[in-house]
Image (cartoon, rainbow, N blue to C red):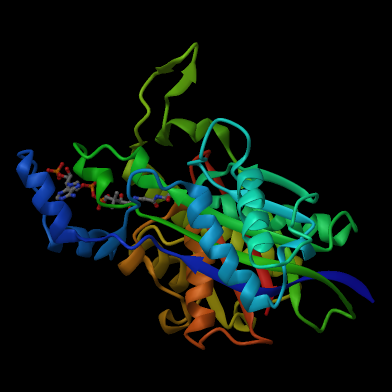
Length: 340
Ligand code: UT7
């Protein structure tokens, strides 16, 4: 018998404000910049994305996704002894968005009449940009397997709209805001039950310039440029290579093959990257959960958002094997193989 971290529930949240490609094309046109719905759909598969209103932070989106996730798992926040939030758009420099989320969940539990609240467990953020959720779930899995935690809330939450340069047509049409969450719970079995079967993480810092927000805060001022910069073609080329490699690596670690995968839940950046990865792995496209068309690229939130979408649609079912994989700034990449 071994200890596994099983997914006991999922949840997600998108802010209500939805912008179609045409909405952004019109905004760009007002600045004299040319774009079109056709270009965006053909090059990326994106048709719409959601943006937060002023004053809404990553912890607010994480809170909504977490409440739905806890409800799906039948858990209270007082059951949770670990919260990890993957984000590149934290509420503030510190404390962590995870600590702020813990407080918001705890206050809501108290006002619901759960007088235990939910404070006391560990809470911290993970920063690996679009691979952040894969990093976070891998850390939570390791903590559960070593007995350091028993019930972990793992959240990806982003307000990427805050980082976008709306004068750069090459990037501002690609990203969106949102949050997704999973509740991991320790369980013991012989390997045939539910749980994370293997994880695989990588980074290569020599590529840090191809996707970055180079600014920072110092001495009361913003130093450098606080808006997103991307060499799209360089990111695209690296992404298709590493996603295939990490998928094969995680399958090998778990003693599985592509044929064992029921669902591929990849980072949702570009439909062309997703179909290329699926093709290389010989996974039919109808076994790939696709939300990029409606959400755009929500960075660390994209994989748990897509997973929750698949679960709530009744597509991703208990007992099925799900391959999640992410890639993003750093350069970072990785994957997690899970039996639901
Ligand atoms: O989440 C992290 C991972 N991120 C990614 O995976 C993103 C990876 N990269 C990509 O998805 C693609 O490279 C993009 C979607 C960003 C760009 O697609 P592309 O096919 O690589 O286009 P491109 O950058 O080669 O640009 C082609 C043309 C250029 O014009 P010229 O130089 O050929 O005249 C661009 O200026 O398209 C132009 N262009 C646009 N045209 C209309 C760039 N953005 C736009 C736009 N509307 N919004």
